[in-house]
Image (cartoon, rainbow, N blue to C red; front, top):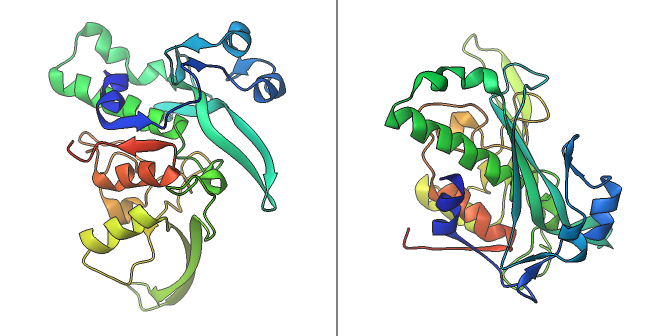
Length: 252
């Protein structure tokens, strides 16, 4: 069901051939693994997968942090080398999702349609990371012409204010400032001066910087904290547009 959601919304930019071959340099650098113990068949590099555009490996194993519901990352991608003074990568070609079983044990006794949809939303959230919503890939996003952005994808701004007790404070915030995300933010929030949408600044490395700020985007599905609804919105679809590797069906 998770894959079907993306198949209905996204199209991957056409490849040179109809065979998906994983990047050999990245495959070797990661010892042929997707996560620590999931071996990628060597044939995925040498022979490839006909009529495929992406490979996803799914596992159900305990997480080091028991609070983690699920986690995901890309484990193979096009290696482009250093360009413009930055390490660049092409689009993700393979990724993994791991579900922490302790959070799904109650499902063994059956589950409602609402619970099933919630589980699908968790999978959709994690697959979004594996498809490129990750700080690892920000410098590798490309514009509609396939060129790396000349302006930073993430911009940092200082914010000042006062606490409820009247104490002044200064903090920094990071924003995704790509064209479609910026245009969405200005229209949705009715503020033509917005530079983009703020990223989460709370939590560990798996949360901060790789999710939308929950105070700004509420229960949108790509915040860093699970909730029963997690609606998939035009905000994250705008980011998919700005990655440069996907086209979004505007009628959905």
